[in-house]
Length: 412
Image (cartoon, one colour):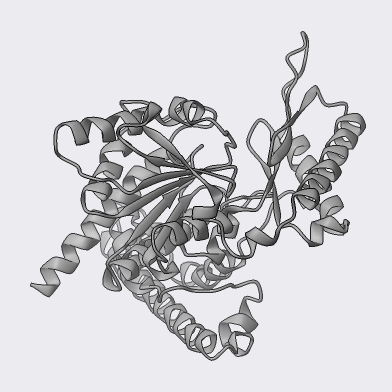
């Protein structure tokens, strides 16, 4: 129960294992049978690409069924029961060709197509499809592990800053949807100062005008928009300007009751596992953080995951947990329960920027697999890209540029 398995990726991985077993040549020596290895790579590539094309067609069929409100009848749904909504087709065969050129998946004799191979292929397929169905209107990012290392800040030298500036220069809206739940602009500035200062400098140099950049904190609870003349360059945006209709129905007494239940559940976890932890209660969140007492011990991953799962179950079974959406997640060195989740966060950004559709939106995040993975819910609101590090985010944005250039070349 420690982690959620991505059934679609695991299913594709199983499909690709068959041609790997049938066509790999583990006993061939590189210096003696080069022709055999070249034939193996060619055959494996063809078979892998065929499988990706077949999966692509199954997704197309699923999208047709979605449009008819009969997605439960799609063949893909029968094969992968957990599969959700697709906002665009996925160019899986083309994406596999792109990734195979980079990762040489077909040339491997001992290591079959891996989870990461398929994850990155799905990312590429999503980028290609977004470009073709373009233009992309909104890109949202998680914070920790997506833009910067866990617990760190977005510093001046971070290479992702120039990529985000390029998005803003092109008129693409950008949202940073983070679990960090602050009510003061100063604290968001402290986490994101490298990007915020770079945007301000670009405006001063007349390289950028009226950038569409927002920060949505606490998953979906506090919005700040970049404003050049504001303190810390961030202006607080009242909830009435961006709150969804469903969210406006959440009663404050229910919100506080849910946080009370969550706080009690966290206390029980601290007691039962003897955690060196302190409770931190916020306006729209409650969580545990490491104790500052001398001799306190760092949380283990298993303790964090257990705390998430216990708290999630208690809230799911509670009366108020059925009335107010919430997100319980492992933050790497803490556990928090937030009101709402990332799907609401992305939807709020879409609404605030004038009603951008999920098929024109890309959310980039790292938390799609572990217990309480908070980026997972973003799949309900838009297309997503699953990255594993800030370096991968940079690579993803560079790859987006490559696919856009290829689309222009084809159109020309």
